[in-house]
Length: 215
Image 1 (cartoon, one colour):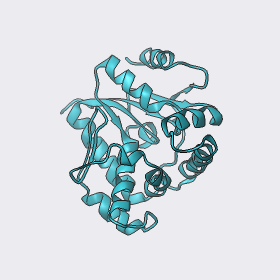
Image 2 (spheres, rainbow, N blue to C red):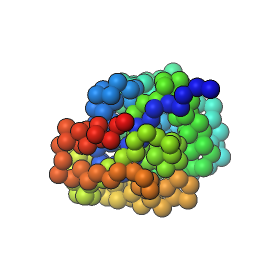
Image 3 (cartoon, helix red, strand yellow):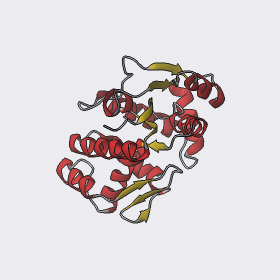
Image 4 (cartoon, one colour):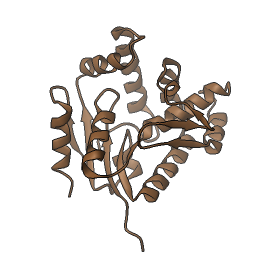
């Protein structure tokens, strides 16, 4: 019998600080980092690249199940042999990703891959929207990061310099509604997660809060 992977689950909406915090925590605790959101973005990227309508659930699911996908701990995302690290963060993928992520078969496939990844790496710091609630309900640490909507929009608009604050804020509100309202694995705080409001906290302060929870 093998030991269960040591998983630190960091969930929360876009702009809450998940990626930056998860990378820092991973470095401090010596575990690899996985951005599960990048996996759904990769499926959206592949769909758009193949001319598949993100709303076509069956075709998107078939594509996801056949996809060659690698999300490296350092952040490089390779889709069917193509480096898509930059493209998956673009506005077209951002608009499509919540639709793709609501696809039940896509979610089943991505969860399978996430669990395989954790097993292969002996665990990891994994961030997303359903890590603590669905993918790893037995994670050794579960944290839910959140922040005021205007703060999250300001953070994201700094990352997406080609879009206005108003456009980013509207898109975040749309994604929040889709992610929280979807039927399968909606974005929510796990019952046993520690909620951290990152609105007025530095990255270092958030990391320290999480590190204190690690057994």
